Image (tube, rainbow, N blue to C red; front, side, top):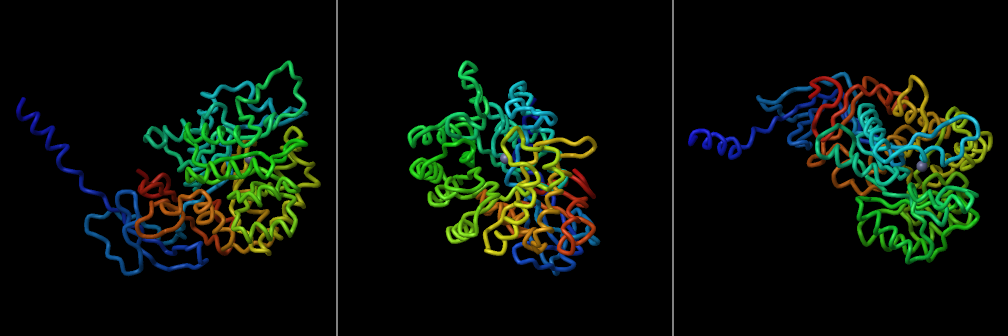
Length: 421
Ligand SMILES: [Zn+2]
C-alpha cells in the first residue's frame, strides 16, 4: 500500500516532460504586413509558440512536422457566425420557423458539429453573434474548453438585444413574445443595461444588438448605455445595421463594429474610419443570396443586395475602414460543409478588388483585435497561442488557396495534417 501511495504521489509530483513540436515551414506569412519569410522553423511548446526564425535550432527530443512545401499562417477567424442556427429554405418560410421547433439542446449539438467542421477547415477562432436559443453556444464553448470536443476558440455574444419584437414582424399579440427564446426585448437605457448584464452573466464576451429591423430603432441614449455597460466589463459592442439614421446613432455612440452595413454612405464609412470602428462586412456572394432570398423579409432582394455589397466593400476599403471577415453563413447546401460556404465569400472580396494581403489581415489579426483576443491569438509570434494553418499554395497569390488548407493546429495540438494528435 505504501508503495502504491508513493507511486501515486510521484506521478503527480513530476510534471510530464513538455513535448516540443518543431514545424519546418517553407514559407511563413505575416498577414499584418503582407510579408513572407522563407524556410522558417517554428517551435511549439505547451500550446504556445516558443521560438521562430530561420536559424532556430531544433531540440534533439522535438517532434518534427514537415511543412517545407507549405505556406504557414495564423489560424483564420470569422467574426460573425451563428453556429447553432440553420435557416430552413424554400417557399415563404417566416424567420421564426428557423428556430421555433428546435430545443436549446439540439441547437448546441448543431453548434458542436459546426464548430468541429469550421476548425478542421482552418477557422481557429470564431465569434458567435446570437440566435442560439437559451445560450446554447455558451455550452458548446464550455464543452470544447473542457476538452470533450475539438473546436475553435469561441467568443460568445449571448442573446441578441433588440427593441420590442426581436427580428420578428407583425406577429399577432395572442401569440405572445415567443421570440424571447432567441432575443431580449430591451427598450430604454435601463432595460438595455440589464440585458447586457444578463448576457455577461451567462458567459457572453461580446454584445450584439439589432438596430434597424423595425420602423423604430435605438436612440443615441440607448446605444450609449449599451456601450458604457459592455465596455465597463471589457467586452466589445457590435450592431446589426444596414445604414441610415440607425447607423448614425451607432457610430456616434462609439460601438466597436458595424455588422453588415450594406448601405452605408461614403460619409458614414469615413466616420467609421475616423472613430476606429470595424466593419464586419458579411459579404454574401450572389450564389448564396439566390438560395436564402430575403431570409423571411430581413434582406432586400438578391438583385438589389448583391451589387450593393460589392460596391460597399470596395468603397469601405478605399476609404480605409478597418475590415473584418464575417460570414453569417446560416444555410445548408447538400454535399457542402458550412466551411465550404464560408470560403465562398472570398469571391466577393476579389470582385471588390481587395488585395489578398488585406483580405488575409481581415481573416486574422483584425478580428483578433475586434474580439479582444489579440494578446493571445491572431499572429505567429513568440508567446502567443499556436493557432496555425498551412496550405500547399500561396494565398497571397490567390486567396482561393485558403480552401486548400490541409494542416490545422489549435493551441499547439495538430487537428489536421501530418502528426495529427
Ligand atoms: Zn448574422
